[in-house]
Length: 310
Picture 1 (cartoon, rainbow, N blue to C red):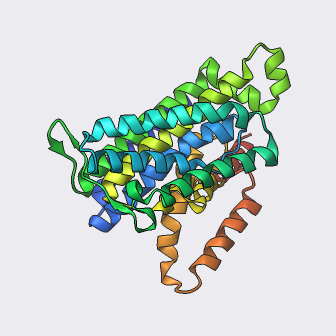
Picture 2 (cartoon, rainbow, N blue to C red; picture 1 turned 120 degrees about the vertical axis):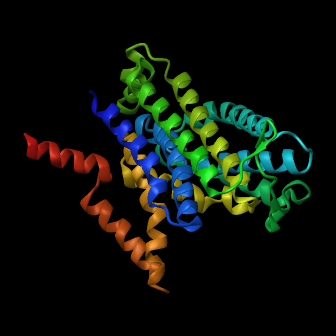
């Protein structure tokens, strides 16, 4: 059995038995937020970790999905699933349009371009008060499918757990496929990838759109789960949080993305006891982690264990 298959089965087992260890709604809420962040991080890692294309504006795509679901259901009465699909389609269209010019850039220029895109999307959400409620935010209707309403932490945990498994399995399959090897070749050297016959611009656009759509869908899920939205979901700090999850857990590591999302979602809760110092301690932990685990948690530990085994 391949290591990735064992890892996926272990993830499925953990998600299946975790509810047995969740004593109340607070812990369910924490687990749901972990799963949502982990799903987005897996998609973002395909772009950043495997393809080597930085994105500092992914919270903008998250915001498109979230506000599309909120506006289309609450203001226009569309079914929740249709609103989610339309939000994902709008995100895919926008990502496709901006991807080619943005992904021609490299390094700091690419980072600034994606940052600018995220800021534009955030400003639109803040300023279009007629539709989004502006800084005050807006309520979101409950999610319903075929007349059945998803309500309660246990039901939502089941939904996000299935989505996390689905995206993780899809990411693992993509990485093992020729398309995944093409993405990794682009990360290694775009010139060499072109020489090998890989359509570099096309692959970069596709993975950018894919990661954006995953963020959009999870934005819709978050909107219906939380029941209220504010522009902060599409803000710069949310984008930084998402990219930090990928880097902390380990770039080019699907399970590293998941672990990074779990750590960054859980850590602020654990540090809340250090009132007034939680931000300092949080930053110190991240700094020490990157000093002693420079490749990210999972890849660094994997290399250390592999060295000992050898």
